[in-house]
Image (cartoon, rainbow, N blue to C red):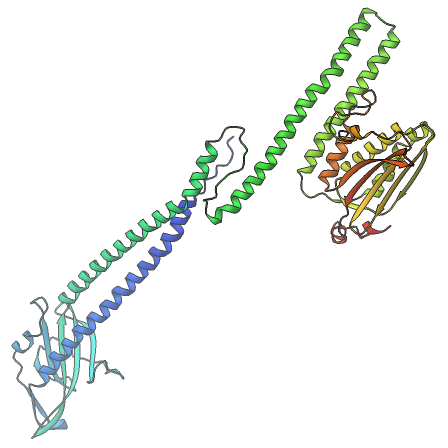
Length: 485
């Protein structure tokens, strides 16, 4: 069964869509608004012509009588409107009526105006404009209420002038075509500009991708891209940090494989020789089994310590460790090895203070167990062995003091290196190396120093200093008693 497929997210497509869509939407809205504004201006211009036609007709009116008795006469030749017809495309019609709608002159088929004059007419006249239909064609009509006066009369005439819309529609279509053509050209220019800018802006990303693809399989060197944009620098820095951790892990893995293959080869070869010798009967069976058991014990100890060394590195790469009480761990480990202490008849003393540190419990157990084992093994039988854990405001110090022979200066410089044992017959040389790896992972320090008096070595002090967890971290961990003594 195939798993779900995920479409690859394209940065360039996102930029193009994110920029072009709003631009196209805005230009489309702007084109629509501009077209309608142009139509409004066009209507205003041609309505002025209709008003001029109506005023021209009003000059041809005469009246006899007053008010209801008035008789209006109109002598309006159709040629008087020809001057206002544009390019012989549109046609104009007129009607002159009384206020009651009685036809005086013009086209009787033209419906009489039944509207009202706007409170604020667009021109300094009693004029109204509206759309209507005449002879099956849409027309634009101007209505002018014109007072008519003469020496022998006075009245009010209603003058209607209608014009077909061919010119207006042709001009509006031409304006629309020109507007759309210009806006399309503008969109094309913007699209080309956006494409060019996006292509240029994403060039460093493509360059980095090509740079990484051209690398060798094991090349984890830092990415050098000083010319990359400022926005990419955090990504490059984070990538370099990841590569640094990977280089460290790879080196640790190679070292572990190398050391394991080298160190385990010897005990396995010895074990094979001992088994072959026992099978030939070169020595008594009991002695042969005893030697085989010792070899297996040393190989097991070596394998366990090498796995412990690898586990330290694994825990180092994990997220921030919890707060753990070192004093509790120290007392527990001391109780576990108490049979060894009793076997050597040591005068053992321990003093602890509250010591909450940020560390995995396993790391603290391994650290204290290795140090106490070393101290018990090297302390003379019947001597004193003291353990002290004291804390100040920011650090805790673990001191393990024995009364053994101490160490010479030359050995002290290499004791923390893997497989550098003081006595190869009693250890693999990994115990102190594990301790140092743990202490460094926790941000602390470890030292071994001879305790001297009057030029005579009284014993060896192993001192470990670790940073304490802050009170706030202890509270966040849900255990305010971490700081209780």
